[in-house]
Length: 411
Image (cartoon, rainbow, N blue to C red):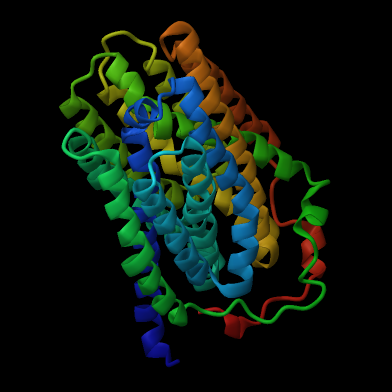
């Protein structure tokens, strides 16, 4: 590969990663918008049907270390291709056979969860890790993950508009066909361009858990990331239902989600740029404090959708990008995929609890107020973990003894 072609190929791979993150939002977006319709279709209350979302969130977390290890072994884009195929089969499968709730949970909650995990943050973090030198990784990861922001801006209003026009089965079926064929095939073909991970030795294959289990920085990262997952799950499953219960107009919900996406886009770029100049543990604590304040706004009667959308959107990707950057710097490319996967497992444990507890709270009280108040407290704790627990985060000394990755493996 010639030197003159490297920037073009790198740019193309970043664009592909961005596109993968963009289309992946359809998996959760469709479930989010059709959540009430799906519960009614299967004859379930929200708390009963929320188990499908809870299983999905938990399975996504359990799949994250698997996806990290798979990305290390076969490459992130091949992993994403397998994820697109799995997501497509899951969506198309539940659209074709709508009679069984158990089948829905099995397909969407497990196969769909693998598909989403394989198309989002962990594989894309490994792709960026292979493409860029240390200083540029944060900003590059921000660009790639902003695909989710554009998904909010473009696709969320589309699903909200589509919901009264088309049944959930039709929407899931079409999306499934798109994932299973053109997206999966395109990603598999594009995987030929991605750089290799470099040669590994027995020392490099050291268990990630062996490295992190006595590392207090890992536990501080995981505890703070729990709050990220808990709040994101509220957006993914309960936010539209909460706004519907508040009597918000469909148009207002649409531009609220778009606004959230626009600010998410900005927060991704800004967090990556700020991390080059300022202390990352303070930035991360600040993003969690902002998220806590934005959740508090949902409890203010008559405030509308915009104040929350602005505050939450501004914090949305900053927490993921900065957590990833701590992972880059502390654990390096050798076990970064596995460690980031473990962090996403904790992230999704928070998501699992929010989905189910939110549904139980709604069924018991008729509102999400108790759930929202709990999330305000959880994100304040996340802010404290970042502020006090990550002050001395840096490269883990034990990893310095591992063989360096060959320079030829990087672009």
